[in-house]
Length: 410
Image 1 (cartoon, rainbow, N blue to C red):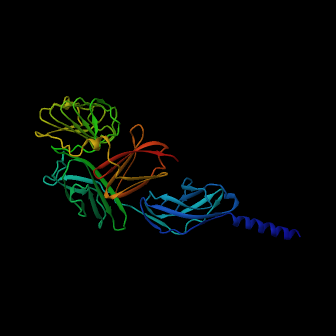
Image 2 (cartoon, rainbow, N blue to C red):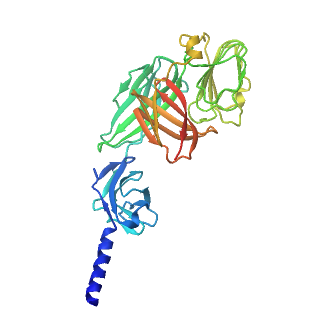
Image 3 (cartoon, rainbow, N blue to C red):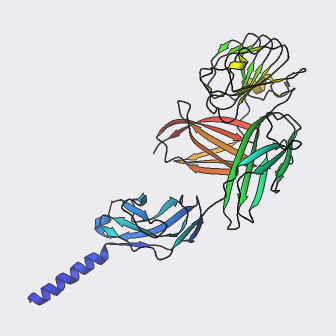
C-alpha cells in the first residue's frame, strides 16, 4: 500500500511539473536588420503563472545569458513579446521565465545585421566646397560621407519645389526653386536589404522671400508662443521671444523690430533666417546663448555688435522685397486645415504623407528635444521610453510645418 501511495505521489509531482510550462512559438524569420522588431510568441500553462509577469531574456552575441538580460515583459498566458533589436550580431538566443518556470532556450540562432548610417553632405556644384549660404536656383551636389558597403543603393528625396524631386545617383545634383527651409532625405540600402536614413535640413535664401501662410503677425510687443515657425513683424511690432524652439523665418517690415534673432534650441543645427527691409531693425542674440542666425538685410540696415556674436551671418540684398502671395487675411487669421496625417495610438505615433521627407521632433514643456525621428513617406515610432506628460510634436513634411500638442500616458 505504501509503495502504491509513493508511486501515486511521484506521478502527481510529475504531472504538476509538466503542468507548469512555457512553450515558445515559431519565429517568422531568424535574420533581422538592426532596429527591426523581433516578435516572440509564447504559451504559458500552470496555476503558478496565473496573473504573473512573464519576462523575455535575450542572450549576448555569443548565445550566453547574463544575470540582467531581460528585454521585455508580458502578463498574459498567451501572447507575443515585441523587442526592437538594437544590437548587431549572429548568435542571439532567447528564453522566457515566470515565477520560477523557464521555457527552453530557442533552438535557432538569430542574426541581426548592421544597417547603413548615411550622413548627408552639401557642396556647391561649381566650387565643390561646402557653401556658407545657399540661394534660390544654385545647383548643389549631395553625397553620403559614410563609406557604405559595396553594392549599397541610394534613394534621394527632395522637397516638392526641388529639381529633380528624386534621384538614385550616388552623388545627386539638385536645385531649389523657392526660398525657405528645405529638407533632403537619403535612404541607403545594402545588399542584405537593410536600409538606413539620413536627413539634412538647411535654409535656402532669396532676395524676394515668400512669407508663408499661417505666419504669426506681430504689431506690438510680442514674446511669441515658443513654437512659431514663421514670424511677420509689421510696423510698430516688436518680436522678443523669451524662448523659441526650432528654426524660424522672421520677416521684419519698415518700422518693425526683432529683438531676438537666433535659434537657441538647436544652435548647432539649422539657424534662424531673419529678413529685414530698409527701415526695420534687428538685434543679435545673447552671446552666451549659443544662438545661430542668418540675417538677410537691405544695405541701409545696421546690425549692432556683429563682431561680438560668432553665430551671426549677414547677407545683403540691394533689392530685398517680400512676396506676400501666400499671406491673405484668411490664411493668417484662420490657417488652412491640416494636410499632415498625424496619428497617436497609445505610445505609438505615426505620420503619413505622399512620399515627401518627414521630420518629427518631440519637445517637452521646457523646450528640450526628447525624441527626433525622420523618414520618407511614412514614419512610425514608439513613445514608451519617455516620461508621461504633455509634449509638442513638431512635424515637418516637405515645405509644411505643424505643431501639435500630444499627451503621453503609460
